[in-house]
Image (tube, rainbow, N blue to C red):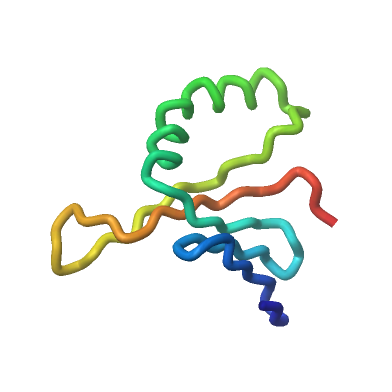
Length: 88
C-alpha cells in the first residue's frame, strides 16, 4: 500500500515492511532468530561502523519487541528500524 506517509509491503503471511515517505527509514518485522542474531553481532557491527564510516552496510537504528500486555515475556513481534544506504 502507498500513502502520503510512506509505503508498506506485506513480505509474507506474518512479516511486513514500511518505508517512510522520504525513504530515509525502513521498518521491517523480523523473526526472533533474526533479532537474536542481530543482538549477537551488535558489538562487531558497531566496531565495523566506527572503523569504516563509509561502509555500504545499512545503519540499524533500533530493534524493538512488542509484548503481549497480559502475558509477561510473551513477544508478539520484533521490528528493526534501518537507515538504508541508497536513499533517493
